[in-house]
Length: 103
Image (cartoon, rainbow, N blue to C red; front, top):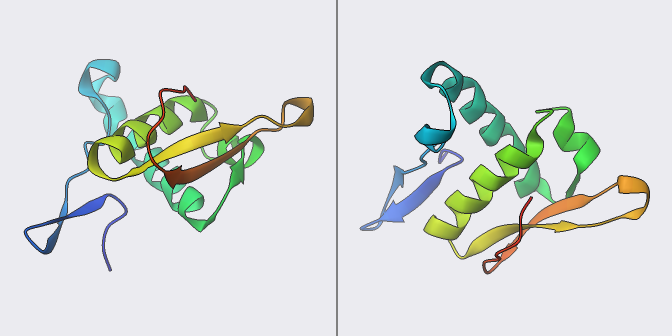
């Protein structure tokens, strides 16, 4: 089974995920933040997820969404979009294309 952050290179799957932009995180935080990214991406790959669900993984889920969005846009033809809902309940999902929007 392929890792969450995998792309095909010359016909073979290779892990190519840059877990966290290093200039944004202390080195000791990278493993924790990378794990949060993986869990949020796995949830988004199941379908749309609310901000309440994502906050259960990371209180700063918007930063994780930004990391995931940047990686998806760089390595795939996908992005993460946010649909604003009533009462502050927003829904995030992976879609085709890229966006200049923010988490």
